[in-house]
Length: 248
Image (cartoon, rainbow, N blue to C red):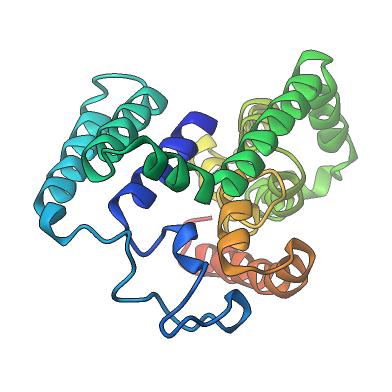
């Protein structure tokens, strides 16, 4: 994931695309970073003569990813190397493009390692299994036939405070087994388990959030205070719709 993020960022920066963080240094007319209103149409990182090369490189990269020719991080790094070499043949220009994305790369890399350690500790020590069993034991027997609803509600906090791997490989199988004991199908439990994904995408355990927050120049705490309430509401609407249409 860290390699993929680094490669994607470098490739976008090499192509001079609108996602290049380095393009925010100055705006049109020499505006400061705080007064940034839009990308300078005459910025030096643009490569209009290489438009079709960059477009074909992007399509080739997507095709290779879909066909799984190589691991995704390897494909992104190869694509970034080709984009940098062709768009910026001089080494100092390549170093400037990489430096422009260094903050995002370091933030994402650090978060990926931290999330991996957190998930590894939860899984390796058996804490995920213990939490799953404890959750099932605390659910009243009368709620057994409503395990779809229970799973949907539990997916909100659990997918926010733990990784998807921890929830779907550790907690969900136990919930599905408890649901089957009360006549609730595993398919229904599976549907209910994805209700919390809108909230999960704002979790501190999702590295992409740090990239987007950094590019938007918003503090992560401010982002969380604004987004979480709407993400919870969205998840609850999805859950209610699933119940209304009989899916859950």
